[in-house]
Length: 158
Image (cartoon, rainbow, N blue to C red):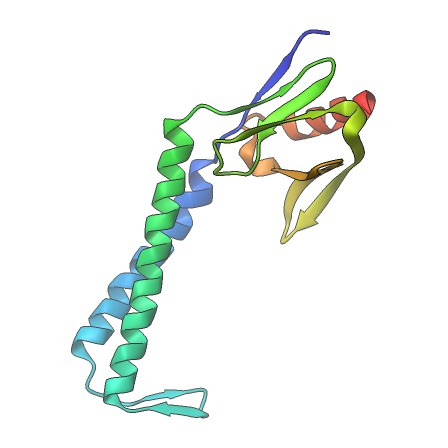
């Protein structure tokens, strides 16, 4: 059997929208932190004085910036590296995770179960093998129908 290859990279929209959302959050929270002169009442339960409220805004601002940086890093890494899933007659080779450069090789006789799982409306291919679990998110495969094709191909192999 010849090899079957599937491009494995993040979709731009998967990262762009969250990056933009947290960019807006960072701008708003930074402005609030710089200009804060009021106490903050959270759900009518927790009251923070001006200093505590300012610190709270800065913490949320920092968290937003960290999410922007990590999303940008993952997006750049996805586009700067070429990764793929390769299915041969004896094994599947795939990146260990969505942002990992490490490729793992799993021989079909070591696979005990293959299933499609859904978490928060995101489909994933879960491959349980003798050394652990490999999860392949549907949104990391570029072409339409590639996820289902890969799933059916692996079912035939085990």
